[in-house]
Image (tube, rainbow, N blue to C red; front, side, top):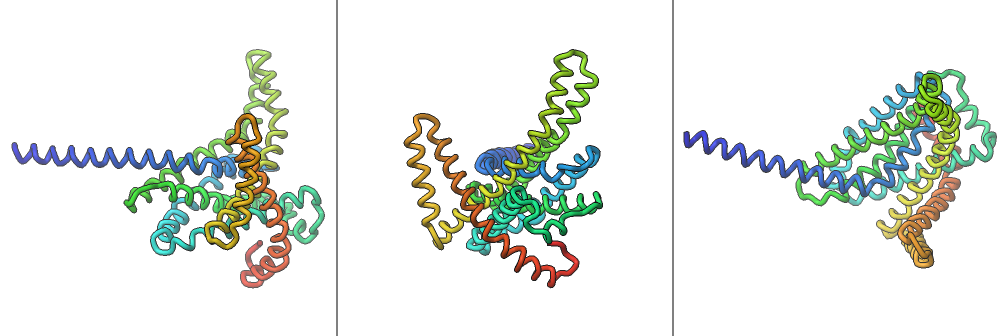
Length: 322
């Protein structure tokens, strides 16, 4: 009997340790998720544009494919990769993030250039002008997953930096929890956004009250404007996040600290001049200048990517499409 009681005590002790670990993981995940909230919002804003123009019955399957790719990015590539870099080559994390930030600047600037001048580059237009919906879907999904990889890398890196634990396994489990929860929230929200017009059509056709039917019609009329707005926000988010990553990277690597210091100084002056919401004003000014920096960098990178990197990549891998 005494042996059984001792065993039960051991089991109870193990259960307490496990419960404490779960609490630690939950607390760390919540803290990390809060720190990465800005990039999460950008991720949610960027994604809806990738399903724009497809038949309604393809929207959810496309989002499902992108969400699976996002989860793979976070759990199978970024999680082990970041943990390995954090342990063996912590110095390499910031330069890699800067490369990802530069890519976001390039993609955001390219989208903006094609909005302003759709026929500015006929070669690029011809490359992306496809009449095959299945092929277009493959390109969109691949592009979305590629963009998601950069944003996911930023989310996971911020999360890793926030986790204050010497335990490798606690870090790994917390990152997995953060990556999974954020993916579910982001793509769940995206699915609701892109299907809201279908909900509106259903309400307009089957609503039991005139108010319900009017609300349905309002949703149908509002969704194209909302999608256009989100597409604009998504492009701006690429420039803001990309510029922010590069500027912070330049500061962290001590290559060029002037942009970060100058932007921080300007944002502080603007915040002190504001009678209310000083924290928001400081964030807004910082984000705006980061976005302008990202746009300038992206415009500089467009000819480099399309005239140098793209053709070189195509020669090295003829079967790929850049």
